[in-house]
Image: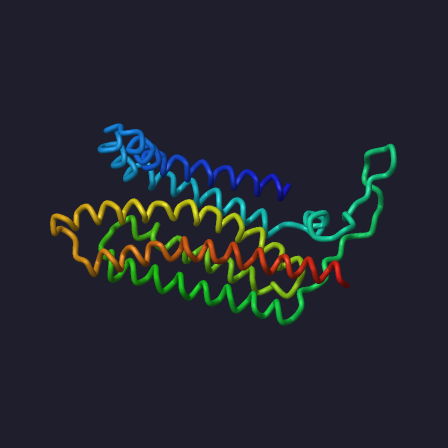
Length: 246
């Protein structure tokens, strides 16, 4: 059930990203082919991006709720060498195998995981607050979307509180994997804003301080998503190596 929920959420998030960024992607592709369609089509991103963002948020919430309800058996084949339930020969039905037990993380690794996610939350929080108060004040409904990364970063910190447990860490890993993939994809949106701002800068319509600050703060959630993806992958690999050597 949880795996289906994670897949459903991932599909929703992916569909939202594709829909929201479709005009921008088509514009870049058209420009590469020498077509003029990109001169106007990219402006439709202002309408598709908010709608796509709503779908992405719903998908991410669905996926990480499913991930946070995963059981040890869901991780058995990918982490341990023995599945949680073995099938009886010839019947195709689960036998009464003993429940899967996921060993805890080494205390040092668990502490690093908790500190890393807490640090990431602070970085994302500061960047988002600076964006909506200094570099993009009075942006209306867009302020809510600018603060969405804080919500997900905080959720991951909440899950990281149980990172010392094997199950807690794997739930955290699975949740942040979905969030990080979406964050990396949505990170293309600030590049569009930066490109548009650079065009206005040529006409003197954009303050350089606002432009640079807005670009940096808007890219930080995407960079944090990529860093989180790499960090969690390394931590998971260390955990698996520890299981094999024990």
